[in-house]
Amino acid sequence: MKMLHMIAYLLLWVGGINWGLIGLFKFNLVEALGLPAGIVSLVYILVGLSAVYTLATHMGDCKVCSKK
Image (cartoon, rainbow, N blue to C red; front, side, top):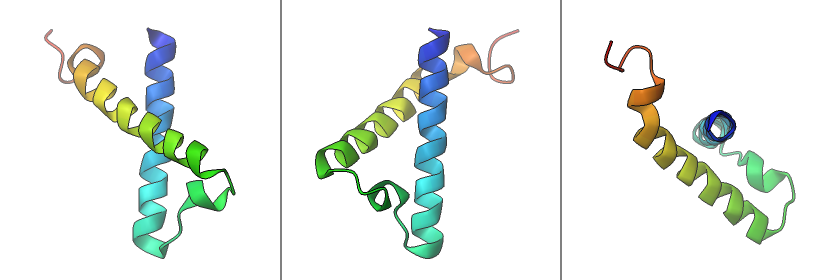
């Protein structure tokens, strides 16, 4: 489970940085890599699933939010 958590966390960083670049500079890093459209869609799907996974498991992982 730790590996899944680390992958989800990394994908959240990718998504956050990409959305920040889109908002600030209208620059989509994922599309700029020149990947095929199917791979770009897969990256977006994985980032979305990572967000859902992180939200669902947040209470167990977070030292601030978890019950002491």
